[in-house]
Length: 81
Image (tube, rainbow, N blue to C red):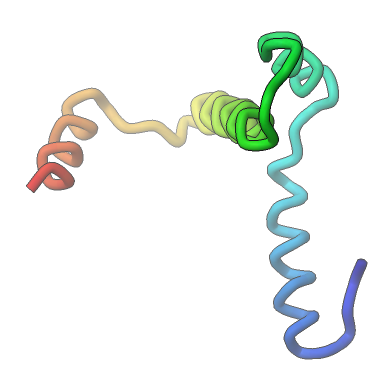
């Protein structure tokens, strides 16, 4: 899994960075239960990404890494231009 080349070092750093964003097995199982009996790999990946994003958002909220509604509106206005 871990590589010793310089490119491998970059990959290792990426892996370590992503490891902090791990999701729980319980969350995955709950997400799977929301999918229909037949689903595509894309559907599965979408569900897993949604779980990760929600968990990250909840953690950011706990860590007070949020912005006010007013600040969010200002940022959205800039993005829409």
